[in-house]
Amino acid sequence: MRHKNRIPKIVFIHGVGEGVLKSELDFLLGRYDNIDFRDANYQKYGLGATEIFIRQQKG
Image 1 (cartoon, rainbow, N blue to C red):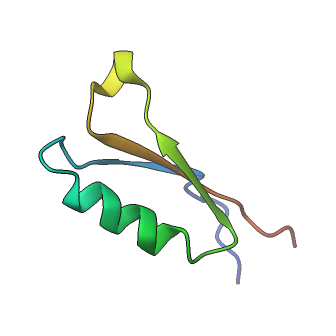
Image 2: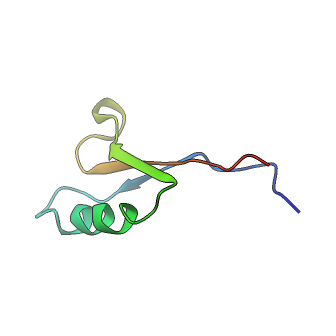
């Protein structure tokens, strides 16, 4: 059974600091073919946030 409600994006707020959490997110997320990510909108989230897009399979 397929779920109708899917989450197309998630925003992780990791803060600025020394960049350890952002680096770990980049490493982990880069391992998946169906995930794209980028720095989140500065005006909405400020510095230290990553926006993650999950490409859903059709069907």
